[in-house]
Image 1 (cartoon, rainbow, N blue to C red):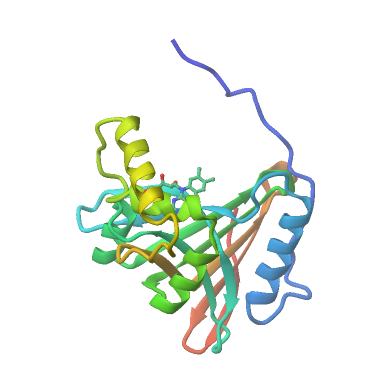
Image 2: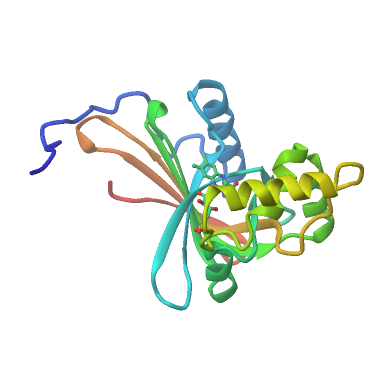
Length: 219
Ligand SMILES: Cc1cc2nc3c(=O)[nH]c(=O)nc-3n(C[C@H](O)[C@H](O)[C@H](O)COP(=O)(O)O)c2cc1C
């Protein structure tokens, strides 16, 4: 038995990306693409896939929500996201900070890959974001630990949630030690624009010392 997709194909004709007019650093271009995705892409344009690989040498990938994309002092890019530090991804990142983030905005026929190293952001910044979330999401962070651990049933989760809701009925929910933000500091970023006849455009910014080198890759 199988499901056969081999005759299914789309021609990508929404746009093009050429060297003319490219910024010398990548932030203005990613800013532009993210803003266009927020405007035109149906769905969560700020959702991305993060690939990690711990010391077991087994890669894993999952969807996360980007919470901020920052232009850093030295023309670098920082991508901020939040998670449980004891999760599978958290353990992977403790062992190996190298990671890759990927956005795919299907209707725009665009993909962006950001490669770099991930580090934890400050507790102050994590606390600020944590307390800006709806109270139920804050409680859920306390329920879901260690994230990616096994739980006996949905009932166990619900009971934990109710107990915590009672406990913090009249007080601020503290930021858990095991929860917070991460920053992917980008060393390489690839902009992919689909083109007709599989002759896609791939423009890569690669950090080279203090400068960004701009390359075109074969599709
Ligand atoms: C649309 C979407 C958004 C998500 N956003 C987050 C997020 O921002 N942070 C997070 O920890 N998990 C998020 N998740 C859940 C993760 O994909 C994943 O299941 C969880 O983080 C555990 O991953 P791990 O076992 O690889 O650590 C999201 C899932 C989806 C489908």
